[in-house]
Length: 163
Length: 163
Image (cartoon, rainbow over all chains, first blue to last red; front, side, top):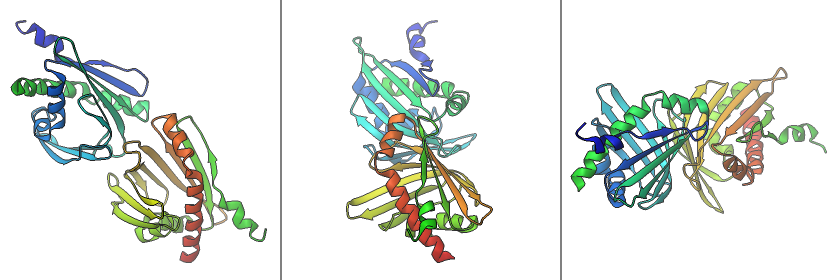
């Protein structure tokens, strides 16, 4: 492979720390400030979150207690996602709720942290906590992992363009 | 006590079926259809949910996937509560999410069932499932039990008036 370095970071590391959680870890080739920017500015989020699908950001109140709502328009239909921010610590950590319109009131809590690595890259750790194991497993079997990896690859491209 | 029968039903039975749940059971002196009506028509909800405090029902989309948002105005301040309906089975069962603005994205799932008793009364069973034991305990120590009992007593009065 010619792009071995890129390939080495291209797949998120998925694990299950408990029977109601999953955890994803992924390294990005950018400093933490830049990753934070791409993850928290709506015009940038719209470029990667939907993995190429059009994303309409209906609500983005980026503060504790604020709501978010993203609607993804794909060939397979329109999918709404929403939640609320529990905690925001700039460039370091976001805790928020997340639900998909297709399974209303099945709510997971996502904790996302960014760690600056010595080599200038940034490690993202994202954990999701569900009310039940069945909800966790349902999400894991829904194609979530492949979808997340496609989003992260799109985020790689946004980060490179920001460079 | 002169009103012994009323007193016997006036306190909800509280229990903890698991380390992330609590359960309340309460009998109402009304048929199930009437209890359902008082719990699902906004102008009636406004008469008991706030235990005497003014309740503004900002959102009440009473269907699967719909949102609800109630704002209580008391001498101690303004408190917003909101969530979304997961499941509605008429006169029998409602499953919904619930959060208080003061602890955004701390979300519990409430399952409420109504059972018609042979004597014409109705048994309400309400369970709340939290993401963590700490959240469950925080809610239980917040005065929730006393507040719920006051709401249920106000609901008794609404049911009697509907009679």
